[in-house]
Length: 302
Length: 305
Image (cartoon, rainbow over all chains, first blue to last red; front, top):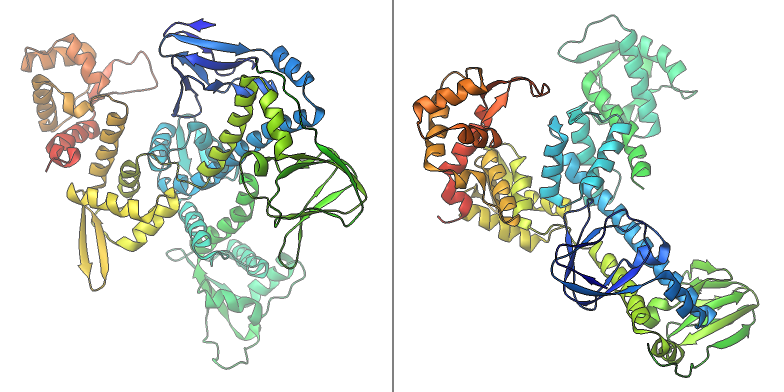
């Protein structure tokens, strides 16, 4: 078959049917999912996966000059394979499957690798177009992939997509998440911002106690009586007991501060001998939000 | 159509449980198809972990045979099995019989997989300088950053090599878009103006698209209008026709088509962007400043200092 310059061979999304081999001339392939332009010259094959898997074509192919093509129909493939031994068909399907898996893996890996870039530029509210542009400039990823990532962050309630705008719910949490991912990649271990279950239970009890307390926050700082905290902890810690030892890691992280200095020897005072605890409420809320999101993010991405 | 040559047949074997079907030490390459039974692939070093189990219909060794990729596991029968071995000679005789397009299809499937696997390990970024300028444009102005830390963070985000990033930092330094200073053993980097870096990324983008960068294709009249609009202390709201009359009064060369050009360049913003019938416009000061800055630092942006 022949195509004149400017003629379209097939469009992205058209049902996959034939395979084309370029004999002469040049064609270009463009997909709405990316900015890359594929060029097909003499000897090149067009539409292999669509041909073998009967899937829609993934790009729009336009002749950039007059072209001569060989059209291979599915019937031609069936006839050729009929003449080959059975094991040969297995090899063709193996190669097809492997190419498809490699494509999916690449897409998944691109998405995972693009997330830090997206979090990095989410320093304030943006229009979706600004985000596309910035992440594309920084990491060269498709709009489609950025959209998927934005949707994941929306599902996790990190941001809200409203029409053409993206509203970041809490910039501190985005920053903490970015720092955690950076730390994990650099040191190959759990980031310090990620708390143990016990630490999370204690902080959960602290948050509930602050909410129940009638005292006003002073510049975001709270002070809670130990008596109130232990009462709340009994219900909020699902059977675990609040002791000075369970609260110690949070004191060491300086998320909480005891109202009396703890002795430096090995003997810790009983918790009820410490009158109260204080801390910065927003810091604790942000950290708890990070700890809610962090384990969910990996699942959503993979 | 290729001629139908004689096919060297594959070998069929019945093997007992424990039989080693393939060892990485062997120099012979072949595709192993499992017809019946079960095969396991193990690592060749302690603790000799099982990597995968093959069930009837599964095959291994295609990449080893077609792409010379080493198959690094030992393959043995975990149950009495029946296998078909496609040797190099057998495959070669088969490939010779194929029509050329089918041969090309097989080679293409193989080559594309190889490319995708390689691409997954490389950076996606094509213009590393644009990527760096975008990265730095999100950093605050006049803060001193440890250069080594900046490079580490940038390379983590983009998977660009450290050497390439270092070259791009030098390129931005030559353009005076960043400042470097040394304190003891450490080098610090200061962003002179994040917006200038943002303008620079837009400039590179225009170059990539083979289009002229809007601030550098302004006519003399447009430049005069730009300067005039930037000097207006207040940004009055006027209808389109009022603005046309106002601009025309100051610049007799400017007509309706000029107004359309100014709107395209977003020098004016609609009072209510969501209302298609709204005809009230005010000066878009942000865009005006963007154009002015691009013009003022043209030599830095173009890199012709």
